[in-house]
Length: 256
Image 1 (cartoon, rainbow, N blue to C red):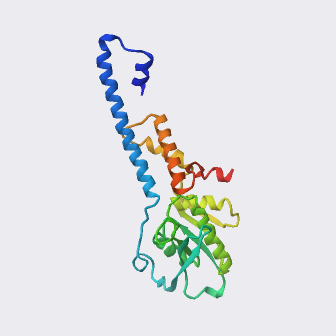
Image 2 (image 1 turned 90 degrees about the vertical axis):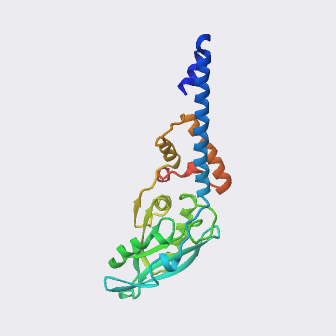
Image 3 (image 1 turned 180 degrees about the horizontal axis):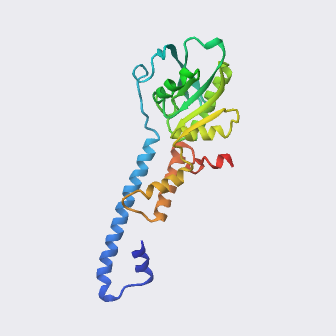
């Protein structure tokens, strides 16, 4: 870019004009090639909004009944409908026999789909903490067309919390989120002060800032104005495709 600016504000002398034009042409070609590659990455991101990791509940979830540390537990499969009418596939890991028949605290594990929650269940169930997990809309076996990295997923989480409150079989509710699930937990937790606590693993604070930072890791650096233009292009494309604004995905602003 510095070569381009210098070419414009300090025109070369005639004896080096041909050589500088060759260099300038090469620079422009390189910039276009890198730009095309970068836009290709954005299109991969757009495609990822509709891609989903499917799984087989019989093979990839904990069994319907299973034993941990000498006690029996069960997986209750549940369907919950979100505010947009999408059916969310959920599972609640609970003791086969509830201790003293009292409501137990519950941790909602938030990631992409239920297949990721087995680790949390194995850790928490022996401490008499039940684990609820879900396929977010657009993920796994749930309804919905798009993954929105936390924007609409927070509404899914609200639907699940409302279900658990109405069911009456849990006491305190906490959230354990990873990656997108951590962002979802932050965005929902800011609206619900009744959440007892949150474990947040690898959330991003601002999606646009994250994109800018990721660009710096590329082998070929693009001028900042080109990156900003590309992000605005993607922002408009996502608004049209998935009906949300990536600039609103800021987990810091929700607490301000």
